Image (cartoon, rainbow, N blue to C red; front, side, top):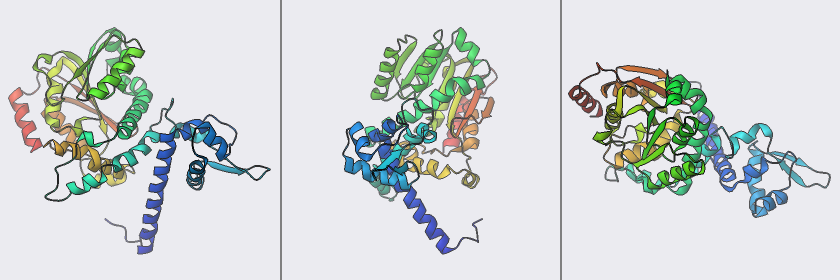
Length: 380
């Protein structure tokens, strides 16, 4: 129920602050994209705008104006030396969240997604019209967007995959150490695949995606680390090959099922390619399927907006279900069970705001015809 204590002036003030924060976010993204934060994070002594500009090969006037946003936004600290020259310092406590190199926090990369997603703002606006386009294509997004999402994924799984996610799956660490077969569905540029291959040399990783560019980046990463236990495959997650049936001990799907045109087909395919006692691990955004239940989450507006500008729109563009990023734990579990899994465990893992489903394939699961029928009903 809406609050009755908020006045019109209160909401006007809130809107003004929202717009101000939006502009500040764009300035933060500039600091990330230009490398200004990376350089400032190296210094424990405050520097002048001229010194910062020279060190980053930037124009001083642009740097100085950008610093104005950073200082008034309480991100960079300002001091004045004995000569009256303004000097600027990025405090140590803020550096990890604002830098890419070696960071275990993805806040910096998230900021860059804001201007990157805004590039499709006009096209998405047209999609709202009844006679407008169905959605947008992945090709509509710039390299800035893909770099930012890659950075987010790298930061998140570098921090959590080996210390939190894998240990939360019963028996997975031991199996990988001994040697197991893993399918990384929708692997992107290989954040999880490369980490797994490096940490568990006795295991084999099949990394699959539809993007040639992402797979090329993955192969480059594997080559640099001399990893020979990764196999790359260009493959649509909605149509996994029939000869992969019963092939893998583990199947991973990280932050990708809700993006697909036919998520039911993806989940069913993940079930099919598992061995009889295999495990499916799915990480996705932690929300509820009910919009009302998501009001409690401070990050929910970002999830819905991200979905409008990307997740839902790319799915609908392919005549897909348009599930959206906020499909929620209830819908997710329902669809996972409809795909055939009967042993389904939900864990809220510490990967920012993710949910993790750990699902076992059991011999007494539903028949293929029952699963297909149930998935078709859910996707209507």
